[in-house]
Image (cartoon, rainbow, N blue to C red; front, side):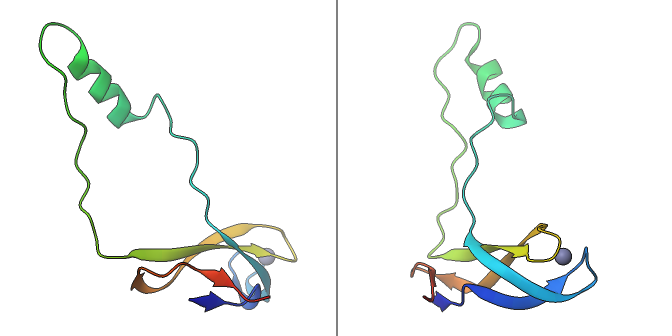
Length: 93
Ligand SMILES: [Zn+2]
């Protein structure tokens, strides 16, 4: 799936259409103090056995998400493009 590097999109901060740079969404560092991680750690305390993590539902493909960065105010916003595909997102050169 090919997508242009720059698009003219609506910026809710400028309240107008501006040129936006498109980038891949990068996954952030997992938080050790997140609610799910704390609940898992709580289940491991005391006598008992190991606990399995929550199983995730496997979908056929993934949605392609991009970050749009406004050229005027440098604010960022996310956008999902297209439906579920197994193909990876590429930016046109
Ligand atoms: Zn803006």
